[in-house]
View 1 (spheres, one colour):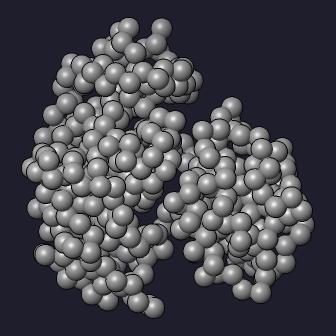
View 2 (tube, rainbow, N blue to C red):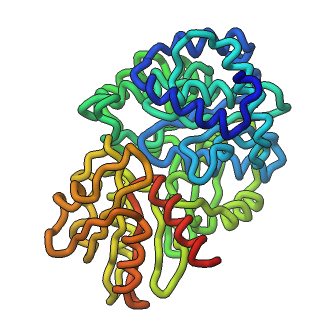
Length: 415
């Protein structure tokens, strides 16, 4: 019966694997990968972990390597609009029928073994990569690192973007415990790119104990931002006068640091042209002007601190209106606290998922006279639009879900 499933039927079927979220047996994933012959990919592999910036770093790696003519496979999560975004070959999403073929092969081998949703779709991505001629594969860690399905693959270079408080109910209640989980992607005697200036001491101990060849920001590689350009310097690269990117600068620098430690050859003029063309949905994305509308998937304290700094630079004589929607496993107070002093009016909304936290719960953590609860993103947007002036700023944030729903609203408006 499963063999005849359509792509949409497979999507519905795989949702039941969310129920296995507490299945922490990576051995099942390894067993299936061995059976499918996908545990050893025989390609150069980057694995990218951390709390924030993983997706952007993967995106930049992909773009720079593609611009230099390398054949690249990218696996990332979560998706913003459609499942097929999660796997790209040479910059392109694959046809649904190819995903279906991989699902069938994995299910055939899985039998009665328990997998989580992320385990299953990671195996699917690896299966798709195995059957393509690629020079490099980029894997974004889904959650944590040590027990994440991507970690069954031995990377040539591991990247840790940062370590901050998120998913504490799964990864641990403090940065040391979270750091242990994140550092699970590091490998003995292999290169690790560390792009955080504030790594927990426990992670430094793990790096020393396992003789990991760590390349540290501000020690082994450097970047410096100026008004209209920036510089990147490492042992092998000296790229000066680079254009400022539309995506996060530190993630671009991290990607360059990772490439500089590989065997891939890149040229400054190609990198400059590539940076000029980079844009990524939902990462401080300025969707429109007059008023300025910004979309951002920021969903933890570290990300909203960054968002607050960016908004501070934008704030003029107008007001800042925030539309926020959050998932149940998030700490609301830690998300909103960096923005309390800069946002003037709050519009809290429910999201179209069972995992959404109620808008009224978000309101409880906000200034009472400047926050309202709404049943949907569409209702919140309608109210905000009736209030704002062209000199104001609207920021929509809190989840990948809210950015996706805002795009649906914009699509209907533009019909």
